[in-house]
Image (cartoon, rainbow, N blue to C red):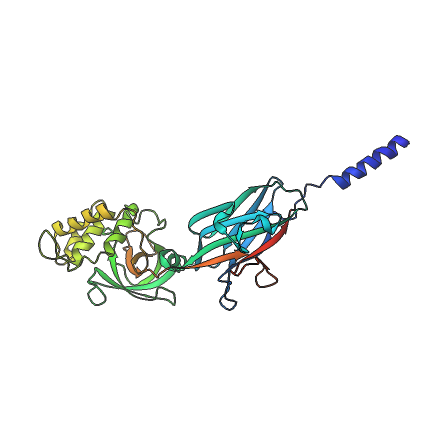
Length: 350
């Protein structure tokens, strides 16, 4: 009997002393706090997303999630400590560049850090999640693109902007509403009658079999930013919209349909080849920047031969950067003691 009582006593101690392998915060049910931009100005502060924290008994995970599609992450810096003094600071202002975990990102919406879980259950941690978010620019425009618009085309495109193969009017109440210079991307399909079109960036995956060499769309974007029309050519005369259109077909198609060549107006194969050669020499990896033209592709729904894919020239807005910190900014934020705006949050290992 004494042995049984002793056994039960020991077992009860083990239940008290040994943590149960159950985690309050998991990937499906994490701890969540705000990701706040421009918090130095109380009125301008924006909740652009969340910071999520959880663990699996082996690792601690800290995830930055930008939910506002007008913004994306370009930098992140993360520190996890048991006291504020362990976080790199100068005069009470944190130094994100000296944080343990850091990264640069190509306009990311989601960044996760995986940290070895060296703290016991119940340990109180202080977590500083700094980042830089960007809005505008080519990436910002792409993030705001609608799925569909209504488009109408005018051929040739001589009534708006620069001389171009098409003038295209976009409507439907989206950020793309307006009139644009435009080009045809496929001579094998029919003229694009007005109607509903799906919208794609020329830097994202496209529907299969609509463009034969989509890997050359960076060269096409370079071409539409060079203002070739009316510049002098070494061949003869000056470049025309027909030369530009032929060059685009040459880069994107195996063999442009001969019948389409009659739609180019005044054009020269010699001048067009000059444009192709210049694009191959200078346009590899080109990405439109502030104020550049970004090719947005409109494709009418239907079989591939029914409607030509159209590239409209959309001006990319200038990018704007903001600092973000994770924490309960709109409640009771934990602030660093320095003069600069910076916050952190507390987390207990579960």
